[in-house]
Image (cartoon, rainbow, N blue to C red; front, side, top):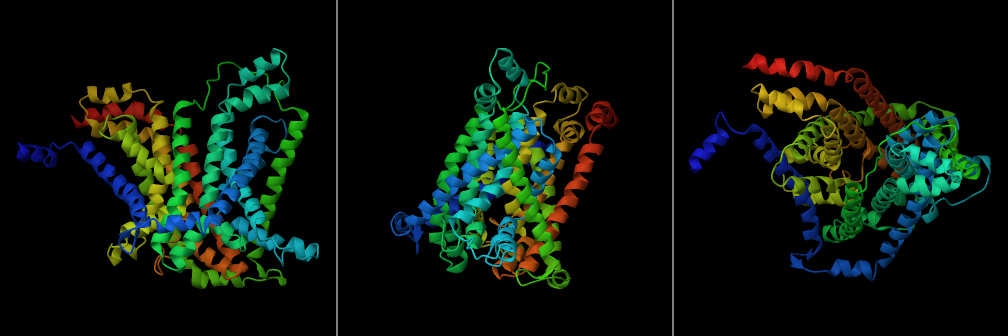
Length: 563
């Protein structure tokens, strides 16, 4: 019997889709669950002996790290949520002009590499800053918790804004109009109708911003001064002193609130509908924000936009400035340095990003089909595990890979395999969720028609699922490409001299005080990501419009041709 079963699996009539699902599921366990368990194990074993020594130190000697992290995280969440809500209401509910400009700035902020805000903050408000020293002529220290909170709030406001915009655009506006028709004021309608309907997006945004703040090590490192937090300490402990048990304990401490947030995140998205059906047209002229709320929203939104434009203008100018803060004359010296010494890292970043994006796109589409359509074993477990890296702190996942796969041969460690794999699995869940969302809107009769014509699951996948999930693949590609080009928190632990990427070069330049080279690297990364995103957006918007029509016309003849 065993021989027969094996021959059926490995022979000509084996269940290919099941084998493919099994392969993907095993990879999810290996590259997500196993590294997570490796960190937990390392944190409780000191020199091979079980010990909670590092945890005791964190809550006694180093308890200020926990306190500082929570302080920064809570204030960052508050301010980022305020800015994000202002931008979301401006785009969806105000009658003001300039909405396309606001959205363009939000998109630009979303594709920017890390540390851009920190770099611009130093260039503008540092001890030799353009505003504080050059224009106003006074010395002011930008370093400390106030600087960290300011920069993190502005950086994470974009995430909050897009999450809240997505929910507000799905709100049934007829409910707001009905409230106004019954005599309620615009403020009463906003407070009792609009915001409660948007609560899932607001809560989700707050949770994600809080976790991103806890896991951000770059901003406190560059502008925190002597103000240290858990994420920074984890980086310094792992890279500086190579004390991996202690670094694992710190990372695990970051994992606890992240995991709680993760469970709340799944619960909110799973049980509260984020979109309401639009059943009636509304009079947009009657809807709007109260005057005083509109003023606050206007100031909050355009204050954010002005700072972002000033930030990017400063970065681009810094790329062509000889010595920022000392000599503001024009130079191409930093561009030449990029061409001579840093170009290989930029090319390597693009290569890694393309490979990660293609792999994540294909895996996302396939897992979306298996988890959303096929009743495969352990589907809910796989879905749960695949969600983990999206919410886990970057330093935790980076240290996890370092501990779990440091035994691999030089071929894997020296070719960027771990860097690419880390990026793939941190963004995999977005492709899965996007694919499942699209599949839920596709009539299953299309798949039944293929099977009625004699086709098996392979033909269903090839002739129906893949063409209809083309947009999902492209969205996953753009997202993963952007992430891989701009990330550093998780991969900095995995970089070797042979696998250095552009964001690490930028990180090193800022650490060394080389503002010109840092500005050049930031500018080039932004330009490359914009070009790739624009190209794939063109494909998504203009080439994929008739994909579903082509599927409806072609999938049955394709089966007939093979019979």
